[in-house]
Length: 34
Picture 1 (cartoon, helix red, strand yellow):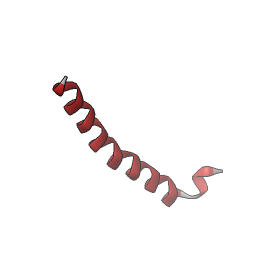
Picture 2 (spheres, helix red, strand yellow):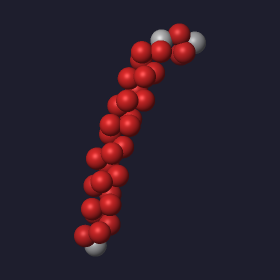
Picture 3 (cartoon, rainbow, N blue to C red):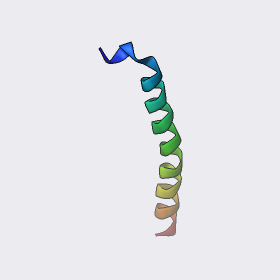
Picture 4 (cartoon, rainbow, N blue to C red):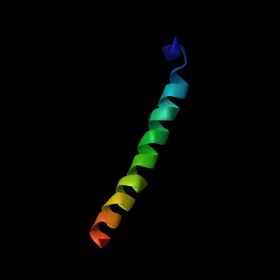
């Protein structure tokens, strides 16, 4: 089971959350510049 390794899941969630911030910021800035 994947859930047998909670630290890895927490790390993936943290990385996804950390990357979603800058990506949304760049998308907003790109849309605003058009």
